[in-house]
Amino acid sequence: MRQFYLSIMLIFLVLSEMFAATRDTSRGSWGLQARQAYGFVIAHRPALELLQERHLLGAELSIVKTSSGEKEWHSGFLFPDVGINISYFDLGAPKILGYGIVVYPYVNFPLSDKSDWRTHFRYGMGLGYVEKIFDAEENIKNSAIGSHINGVMHFDFHFEKDLGKRTYFEIGAGITHYSNGSTAIPNLGLNIAHVSAGIMHYFGQKTAIKKETRPAYIEDNEWRIYLAGSEKKIRPPGGQKYQVGVLSVSRMRNLNYKSSLGAGIDLFYDNSLQQRSLREGNPDADETYNFRPGIYGAFQLNVGRIGFNFNTGFYPYTRWKGDGNVYSRIGLRYYMKNLFLCMNLKSHFARADFIEWGAGIRFKKLKNNSSGKKYINEN
Image (tube, rainbow, N blue to C red; front, side, top):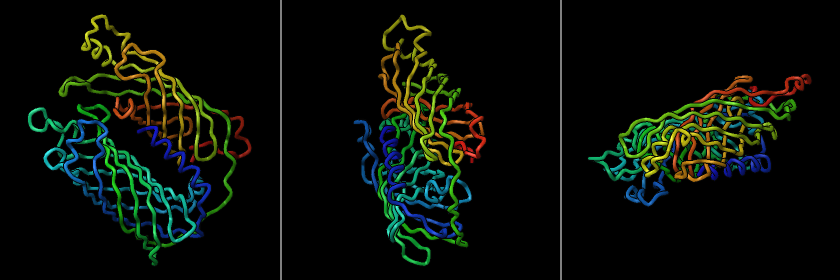
């Protein structure tokens, strides 16, 4: 699933350069959007087929702010809208899941703006609520979610038709993903696939779009180092919490204003691994089982001071074999000059391992900045 997200982002980067044309003015200063959704819960594990009693229904409301070039990254992404969404879902299994609510900020990236039909890609991360969760006595069929509050990731592609007077009709399709990052058990997660239709209307004064030439970006490589920590639970439900630590070092190169590519190494400490090995009948499992190194490839989408990160890595050595040797990581970074904060969801295939909460530093060659060039994530 994480590799799929990365592929979608890479396709978006190509399409936005090839097919989009920018407008002379914004559509307004802000807007309201209402959408109706219809879909289903994806059974990515056989145990989740019990959740597919019927199709689900949803209602969405969004408030958006338009962009017209106030920030340099606006023009690189063809002047996207930035918004916040609240959605309500009848999850299609009243006694097992009940209803769900999600709230997330997002960026609505234009892909095509050449005709009455416009194409957009929306990406956001936030929080979600699930009414009915796993309970060993009253709701044992819910093998997907063990906590009411969860992290949420959402993406969709949608098309807009200009109806006149700053009103647009929208149709689209997307996925909303719930996960608690193993802070509670079970945590197979909920993946909701849905189609949607709705109306967007813009209000406020239209603003002339600033199309000034952007200053050149710095192409130099840079080092990034961060430390992160977390807590997680393992089966069976109701057990204790275990601690996780991460040290990560990467070497990144800015490909352009939008993206960076690189590679890195991780050192993970997870004190649940020794316990899992003991439970599997290995009496010799000791503290060394809790450590495992990783090597990964990294891609970052740069949106102002925000970085959307996608990593795929493997363990060259691990004494615990139950997770396999491949891991993925998807997350956010907020940059403050040389420092940054990060939140990442690490997983093995479609199963979340833990959520990293961390802070880091990056090392740049400041001597190359005398000509007025800009570093990525500086504004």
